[in-house]
Amino acid sequence: MGDFNIDWNKETPDKNRLHKLMVQQLDYKQVVTDPTNDYGSTIDLIFTNIDNFQCGTLETYFSDHKAIWISLGQ
Image (tube, rainbow, N blue to C red; front, side, top):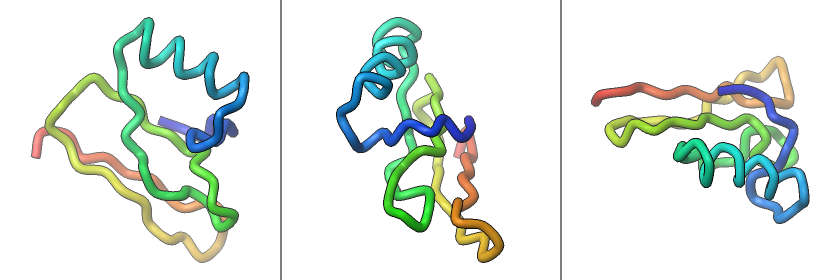
């Protein structure tokens, strides 16, 4: 979980390298689907290999980044 500064919704060399490592090699999935900042990009990411979860974003009002959250085992 964290601010990777790589927009998961855009095809770039950095996104492709991160996808190769996290998804193809380590078998994690990136679960944040909503934009994570006020500019419409998804750069704050959560990777997990757990299937039973809920996640989302929360408005923070004091930052241009939204808070991301995950609840496992719901």
